[in-house]
Length: 245
Image (cartoon, rainbow, N blue to C red; front, side, top):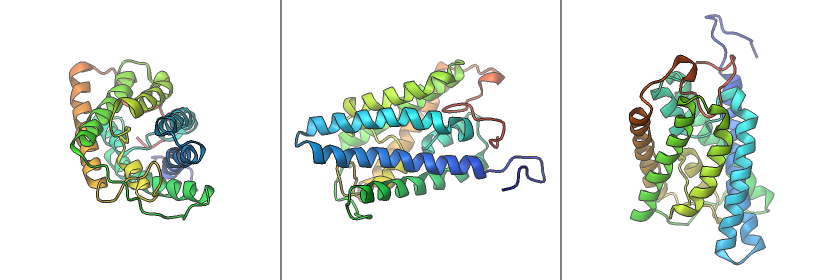
């Protein structure tokens, strides 16, 4: 891998690898802990608690792991919002999005394999109801608010804990269990398990998430209109100097 491109800009290889690996780990966390929860208990409430706790704890760790390399987005909505705020070039955001989706698919397949389930099993769980879609708008808007309110107020270092706590809580206060991420929505289609979502439900979920993301961006602009240069909207953690900006 070359160190620097001819035009002086750093390569995208490292941040793309970080986004792909992080997205795969996120999907493995969500899907794998859901499968384990199903195997350990017949109580749906306990299954959800186990799934939420594992996801929140694991998300905290992988944000810390990959944040300095790519910003630890693992979510197209976060990458697009970061581009809107000027923290990420649009070309980089465009490169992040497919890598995040492919990473989440790979992570779901990996989780299936780790639990001796068919590597690819298309989910049959229908989720696209009105209340679920409203919940996805709320969950995604809230996620954008958490991330960029911290970035715009000089508190980005607290983002890993805040994001993990928010996602863990959103499992419970939203009827959809807070997907809040188009990439993870796509990945979860490939596991017919506790965390899965049927392909017929996924497009509506993704649309609701994009609407929620746009709402979150508008609210951030209203609530945090001033942005000092050192507080550029770079989420979730400030990436190091080798990350393309």
